Length: 504
Image (cartoon, rainbow, N blue to C red; front, side):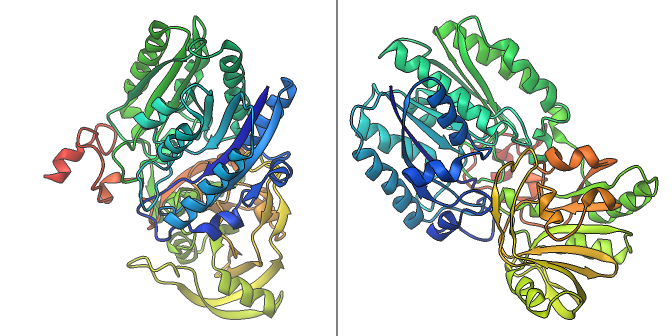
């Protein structure tokens, strides 16, 4: 059969300092740049992304793949109207050239907000349905952090969501979504696993608490395969993306079955299991000062580095990756054999590369995104190593991603090393450090601008992982955020106050 495949991904933090314009998708960040047609197939080949897994699965099932357009940008504030319209327009332009399609697969995120819409994916699906009609099967893969809306559920024939965080199963999820599309295409209009069930949970989950390498998410996601079967084609749980000030932010459950009873039963079971873990989803985090002090003490045992997660400035959640609060604390406490990265500072990376290895520069490092109360860390920095930022990642999350981070430098101040890059990228792969001659496993303390994805590559070498609360635009405590659009009947934190109470 003939399947059209397209992708349009953005995770929108409406509290972040910068928007995603068209150029952000052209550049691509840590993922491949915007591409169309045959170039899309080449760009996605061998990369751990849903569309790549879907393409491979479609071919293995003997289907004909028709690539349309694929684009992704680093998480940030809203997608500009110009970027959204241009990229959506490209998808539909390429779709118009297709004839005799049997199905459509979309690689979306599920938490896209635009300047014009709270639900970028729902709007894309609405326009798609207007073009192809109600009968052509459309299946979508979504990120574990999707804010699933009723419109997404209504307009798609299937929503299939990641089951791991770190997202090491992205390509696998694309393959699962394609298998569901295969079943729908073979079943024909009005038959097959088309019955849907959708539930929204009444509380927001902090990003760090959704990690499937720790509880409660580990056990919760582990139950899902056992709840499938018996007429249930696929069952999914999304943790939601909390730093999105939209009506439908938050966790949800989606099920698809051969009967309404099967779908509803599976959705109820997973909903109840997730609701029972509300208190456990609150998580644990240390203020930066205490986190660094603990890391210094703990790392003295010599059984591997202590990894600090600088979660509140995570570029993977909309942070700019340029705050220096945790770096300043490492320097203040004279943390031994410590390294932090990847700090986004294109101008100072360029200056360091031009000065060369061994040079000493007086710099105002970081904090250039204009966040209130944030100032650069001024001082004399030694340039230990420079690089061009071109390398291929080998860790489980970014596996196969061909990084283009621009001029990079390994700087040192007060005995603490800083990996500085020219493009924003979540520090979730050891090759980001190895590119500049740093072996993370040889350090005592490794601080990362990441919330959870780093765990896939760094947790195996860590003696312990500590989540640190240094100042940044992605606060773990949602009470620090001013929501205006969130529905009133949802708790801002697990077992916390209702949004309606905050509004009054």
